[in-house]
Image (cartoon, rainbow, N blue to C red; front, side, top):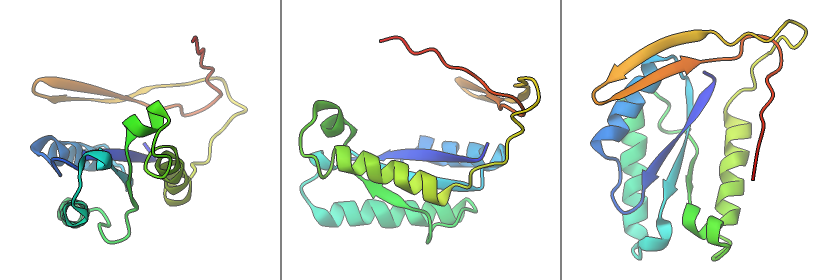
Length: 146
């Protein structure tokens, strides 16, 4: 896996499952992360947002990631979905995707070979299970229905 987005609620900060997700990310070989601090529309105190940012940078460093240089974007997924408060809604999602594009390297893919998506590993975390797949060659198609 080339990278991941870790989502943390601005109202709660990092929770025990955040640490589990960072541990899992390390175990499956993820090198680069982008953090999205969600629900900023529910927090009135800017110092609380700064505290969540500092706390996330500290926990990223604790788990062996580059906490100082990891992009942390603050916004509200609900505002983006509902089309309100554009600066923390839609604009924040666009910043998140720009951070993913600039911070996480695009892997070299072999498109000339047949499609192959092997199971990389299976990880059990009570009560959850994660199976990790990756497309190692070829092109995959997705079907979207609305």
